Length: 37
Image 1 (cartoon, rainbow, N blue to C red):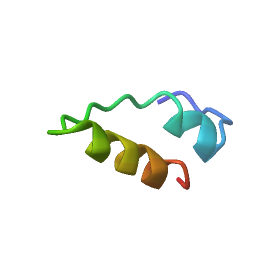
Image 2: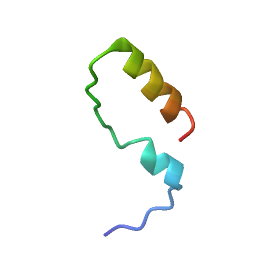
Image 3: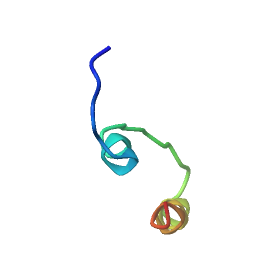
């Protein structure tokens, strides 16, 4: 495997994910939590 000198933050920025929630309130709460990661 080719060695890369990327930081952990750069790697995390390219990992997509999808979250399905049941209400707009839940979306707001999740975004508030994810803001700190």
